[in-house]
Amino acid sequence: MKVWATDIMPIRISNRSDGWAEGSDMVAGVLWAADHGADVVNISYDFGNGFAALNEAAQYLRNKGGLVVMSAGNNNTDYGFSDNPYIIHVSATTSTDAKASFSNFGDFVDVSAPGKGVLTVWQNGGYAWGDGTSFSSPIAAGVIALVKAANQGLSPVEVEA
Image (cartoon, rainbow, N blue to C red; front, side, top):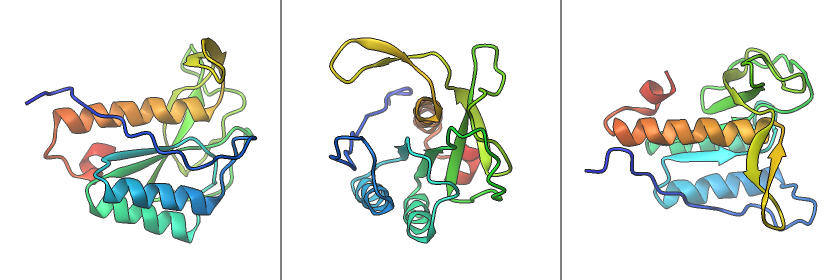
């Protein structure tokens, strides 16, 4: 048994030149991932507290033992949403572990992760520093994948807790 072994399943949900995706693209990606054995799905888009179809897709994955992790958004806004039981929303922190000035916040946020000055691969090759909850969310998803790999018997509720 490989304790820290995890696999990455890249799934493209948008071919648009501006990088945006529709909610239906996110839903299709989550459903496809769920049907192909994904344990953790990262969505680096802000879609607030989700919408009915995305929540249903996240619940479908959760019923198969998986979790959806999603960016909280970069508007320095409290949307006033309550916690979403099917999606783990991630806000951004700085290098001092403070809330990043741009990061959304509120009751819908489940966890925070680094999101200011994150070293990442860049569009045309090489590396660059990035800011945003789109960087925080995959960091949290990676930690969740490692927790699941080390503790394969944990339920999604236990992993989230």
